[in-house]
Length: 144
Image 1 (cartoon, rainbow, N blue to C red):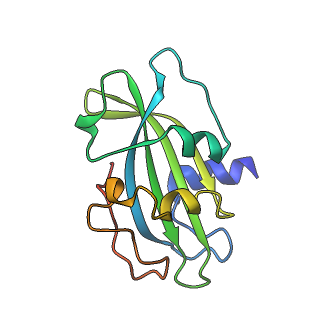
Image 2 (cartoon, rainbow, N blue to C red; image 1 turned 135 degrees about the horizontal axis):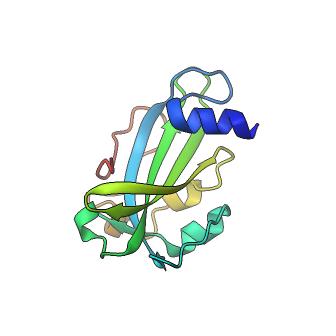
């Protein structure tokens, strides 16, 4: 299974793991990760860590030098309705992204964080997203 994940990460991170159809991105957001700085990176795989430490930012320029960042993309499959969240941890270096870790959450582990209305005015100036019906607009800047 690890090899499949590596290939998926490299070539087709937007394929549905249930039916292999191409998934639609329904939300993208960039976050700073103040708990990690250069020389102090530690890989984490539990969603609770990220829920606690991620701070939303508008653009890469808002991330202080030497601080790690995280790009989150929420996907929905138009064929079967399966949802997934890709979390990409990277260090911004001279305008490029030095990738450290990519995680996929497919059991709704990040749903409460991404779609909660608490603090929505901070993350979503125009209000919280409506739902995950596939018709919602992509919110937040594209981080690549």
